Image (cartoon, rainbow, N blue to C red; front, top):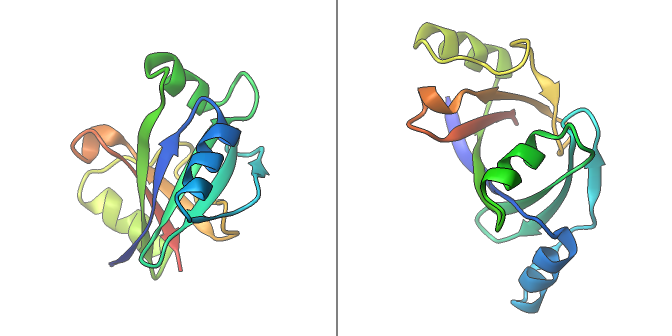
Length: 133
């Protein structure tokens, strides 16, 4: 069901500085995109084999704010895997006893596609996102 690693997400305290650092290494970096439903501003670093998503809080209630309080310098926030059918993945997660965060339904992610997040305690301490291709 998992088909590809879509991206590795890194929470950063300064989005402009982080984007500039990756640009200085020769990477293609997208413009910032606000995702109010998720409480984040994102920038994607595009690489030939995957992407890096730089996350920054959008407002005080952002889940990234809490992450950065615990990790002031930033850090790896989650992994995102592509799946062919998000509803099948939701069923599979339930079948294996993994908890889907939020209300359990898919939301539209940064790429305009349905996404689900699975609880890190169910994936060896790693927050995992699943994105429908």
